[in-house]
Length: 376
Image 1 (cartoon, rainbow, N blue to C red):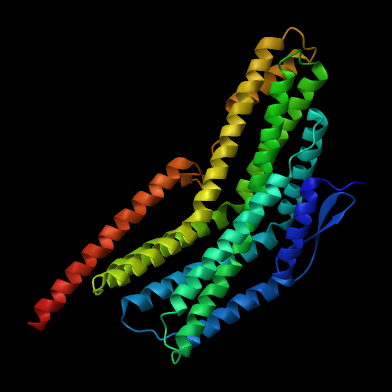
Image 2 (cartoon, rainbow, N blue to C red):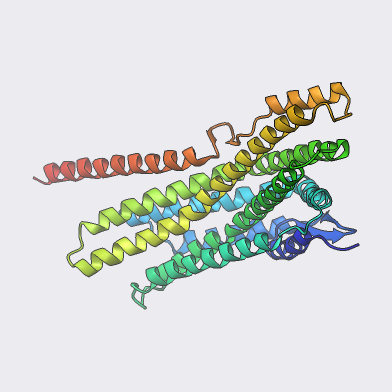
């Protein structure tokens, strides 16, 4: 059996995940099958060892930098722990997502008769991986370049922070693979439907359209429901990192005296914020694109029912039931019912970051006034 294009990409990613102690999926007879292992124990042990080293070498004191780095580190620890546990507890659901995704790719290929442009998925994923690691490397070099060589404990502290941060990219790669695949399959499917609508839609083709659109909607929902808790932890982590880093930058900027130091500080925090929020906003964007794609599919289905209803020999009851499902289908994804995964979330998060920045700055000013009064 020939391997599908998506399965070839997924095969390489599964090897990467298995190296990091995540669930192991092997390709057998064109399907990804989960291999039961206890590898999550080693993943959790790795995270626990990094945390133990960090708490052992970390110098906890009453400074803003100490509080900020501690909060950031443990928010990353929380995300990694949640991801490891969630991925192993829901490995059967991930196996089902793989199976349905490959099935959707095969059905769309048969329906369209054209080659599926899977190269876009691999290229986009590779671009993201390279870009994310380059930004992380630049950030790490920028931070460590200002440290003195004698301060080894701070080097190890930053290294522990980067280890956990790099490990958390496994979740980004996994979720982006599913989102890229769903978007490209859906995009190819919509193009094929629009091409066939230029002439008469046959009864067999309409049945295929019903089946494929339902399958794509179900796969998108499975991805969302399987990873929504980890998504919540990621959003929480990114929010903490962005707000605390921006606040620390504003706090240290008050003590800077030269223009060069100002520019360096602004550049460093800019790169860090971009590296932190890029994947978050990217995920939200692709979830929103998949939602719009689903709405577009529903509109096309309604158009087919109106334009070719007399030519279709599908039973009246099945058509009415499908039409009712379309009208009651919810295409908006929510994170644990708290907020929607669409472009409005980006504005909400930016506004929330600005609000918390104002609170922290005001709190600092009040604290400084109190300390001045007590000293006098």
